[in-house]
Length: 492
Image (cartoon, rainbow, N blue to C red; front, side, top):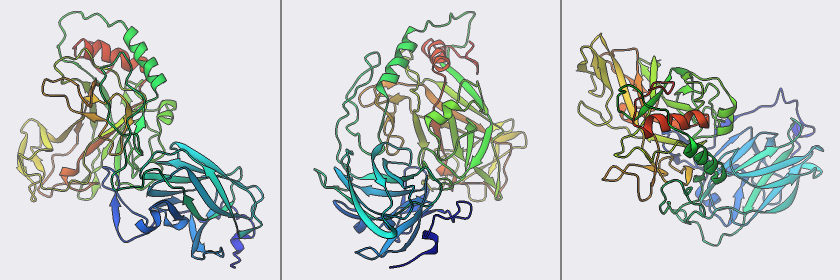
């Protein structure tokens, strides 16, 4: 049995070695979501359940270290775990019970929270941790859980009232499920439906990991408030285009992605963030709503928007401005509903790495006098006249399933209108058509550019909504429902 001086007593938290990294549980890296970021996956033989899940088989972690264990089955355990540290395991079926093999020599103790998806995701159960008499003196604790069927992202989050290390973990055993895990998660129909005031249809048959359902009570209250709003009278002769906008600049840049990689700071390629100036890897709808600072106007829009950073000769070229348009491309705009709080979605594909010669879809283009005067040496980027600048427009889908705030790929809960220009079928609820128009202060050159996500074809955008309900509702009703072009402040 090993005696580790760091485990004789909890170390000073100021000197504790803390790390955040992707674990090389196997030699194969897997792509997560639409971010284009790769994190090593745990060995499949260790993560398939029912059965034993070794603590060191994490896919990603924060604050953990591994060591040889003195426990009965040898191998390694994960230690140096303190309040706020976490371990994530991908593609595991949780079942109805979780058994944890734990050791502690800290009288303060604490607990291990098991959550879905992220360190702040749905809480499945809490496993108490008490002093066991030594850092290699293990006990087994079993908890009952109620988890969705099929493969999940399971996150073990350490909780303690003091800052020192308080637990070692050797393994978890996940209870059997009614349906064994397969390569495609089993699906079940949602038990909730869109509010009666919104168009209804059969929603997507999936409520597994990554599918985040709207809070129906909050959504119904938001819909009721919106329905009761009286539209602002249209005077004069405004342009009859269903549209309003938020005028934004870049707030900050981080290698974070709170939609695709929540709770993993530095895990993404570099993003240029617009809007809410608190946005980082730990952003939630609540943190956005509580923070009033924003690089967008109006200030009632506390949403976060982000795009991959643009690089010219290795140097970041930030947009001098981004107009975030809220409009409608539907034949009938009168059924458009505001976004529910916490709604998020992505357009584009960070993993798409193909050539984009002139005329190809998904083009950067030149806005201003003179327009495009040539192409970069690789043919993928326009060279603009000195009186023009590099520009890109991203347009999101305009129909919603009415049930989910998010989906596993961050796209499957939204979709396009049908052939008649209406929202129907899987996506019956009309939402504002979001569009980013991005202007860069550069004309480019023969050398071309790179995105932090790679080629021009990898351009993508993310939106995480946190508007004041009344401000958003009035703009949707006054500008989109009435089909009247409005400015940043919602005026015709």
